[in-house]
Length: 287
Image 1 (cartoon, rainbow, N blue to C red):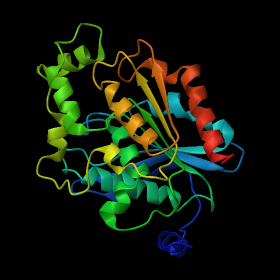
Image 2 (cartoon, rainbow, N blue to C red; image 1 turned 90 degrees about the vertical axis):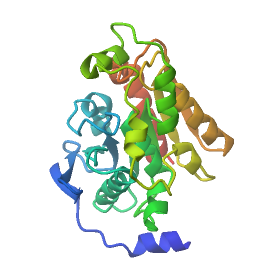
Image 3 (cartoon, rainbow, N blue to C red; image 1 turned 180 degrees about the vertical axis):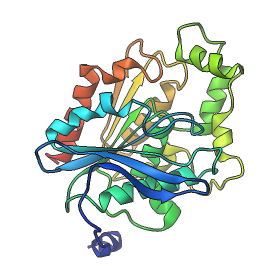
């Protein structure tokens, strides 16, 4: 047994998972919550933990995206949890990584022994899911996860926050009807805010915020879901991480959705939800 496995074995398990809203931690200004939905009339076989989008500065676990995208897993015995995390206006990076990893630990400690636990997230939340899934929280804290992440599902995830800033600054003024135009209409600012820089300003990037830098041999399976017409987070971000995973021999699948923009309704259509269920069943139940 490795040293990391010995640390995992020594961790106490505080009890079974219950449905509802729970406090898993606190930041400088508020309690951080995770909302758990359990399968009906069957035991929990595993779980998926989801992080919302919002450029690290906005949004919350109740943004309405988790249900349409992931609640189909309930029928297969998987609990679905959605967690808040510190926003960039509350604390700088790596607070968001710390929170995401702490939420993973909170959930892992309440699952049945040996149950699979996946990470998922959208946009900025996909960035955090990738960091935790690839071991960045362990590097930050010096602690081993209670269980190894079984796999990661990223919906239009950011790979490199500062690289994303540069892409957005070079982009043309958005056309009406696009996600980027909707974002512009809310902020009134163009070029758009440097959200990656805002995340990192005043923080400590000793643990890299670039997801692909954490790819190593033994990385968990990864499913990237990205629209090729995304006007907010270019599909290039998923392509970079997909390539890095492939270079290290990891299992990485990119579902590139033709014509889909950011936070697209296509992410909740049967083609995509079926791919997610298949990914979770393949790696969580038949590994």
